[in-house]
Each structure stands twice: as structure tokens, then as C-alpha cells.
Length: 213
Image (cartoon, rainbow, N blue to C red; front, side, top):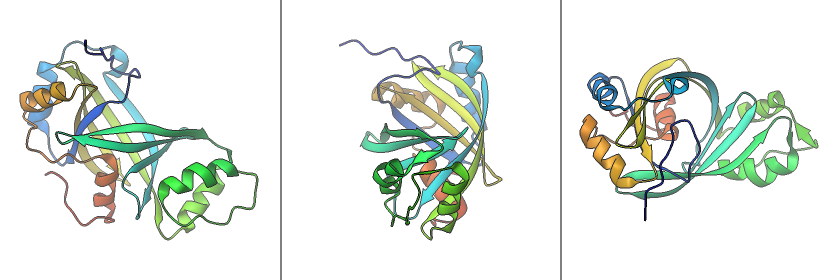
């Protein structure tokens, strides 16, 4: 069975991913850049500002809001230390109460607040989040530099989590063995796999655990 060729910046079937966060991955970043094949200019460098909704009771659904649109991904499985996530929901504001009741708040795995309107604006939704004892909105700014090594989509990113600066590296693909080979080639094998949910919770103190370095 032939491998699916994935294009950087494009959708594919659900991918596996290695990602980690820390204070310094300069040596790994340098190797990643040297080993990368040429990639489209549109993914050389990207910037984004996002809001992640953290839930004290949930580590399997990853919710972020960018440009007024909500995206929820759900954890599927771990294979050879690599995580696979699938899209769970996409929506935008104003958002219907039915979607909040059936999809959004269940994904947070928290008590659902009283919803009395037919739909809610982004501002109204954020007021509910800020008032909820088990939820916290976190501002995340990303500056991402794209690469492709061993047919895996790679990234070095500078990330501000509520203003706290950390860096991240990742390799993702539909093929587990390609990622494992890439991790070894760039010098990232043996480093803890830390996803965005875990990294943000560690930075804001919701989880008492350090980052990779």
C-alpha cells in the first residue's frame, strides 16, 4: 500500500504528531532547517493569535478560537509515543445554543452553565468562560517556521502563552515510521512529547509539571 503524500499547509487524513515545548531547541531547529527540502513560500513563516479554552477536567479535547472561528480536535490514540488527533467540531460566532449544549461544553467535560438565549456572540461566550470555575481562556501567539523532513511536516515555533515565551518543535505525518526517523535525524528522540493542551496547562499552573527543558 503506497503512502499518502502530504502537502505542507494542506489537509490530509488524520496525522500522527510529535511535538514538544521548552526554552531552547536551537540545535534541533538548525538540523531541521538543514535537512528540510524546499517548501512553499506561504509556509516559510506564519503568525497567528489564538484563544485556547483550558478545562481543569479535560485533557482529550483541544479547543481553540482564531478569527472568530472555533476548532475542536479530539485525542484518538498514541502509537509509538506519537499522538493522533481528529477534528471534532468547527463553528463560528454567533453560535447557536444547541451547538454549545451538544458539542462545545460537553467537550470541556464541565458543568454546563444556564443558557437562556438562542445564540451567543463571541463576547458573551467569553463571559461564560471567564465566569466558569473550571475553565480558563488563554491567549496564545504563534510565530511558526515551516519545514519538511523525511516527508513529514515540521515546524519550529516561538509561542507566547499569556505573554510567557516558550518554543516548540514538531513533526507530523500519516506515517509513524517517518516521524520516528525524523525525530532521530534532528536529535529529538528521547524528548517528552508535549501537546498544546499540556504545555499551556503547565505554563499557567493548571498542571504542576515542567516543560521539556
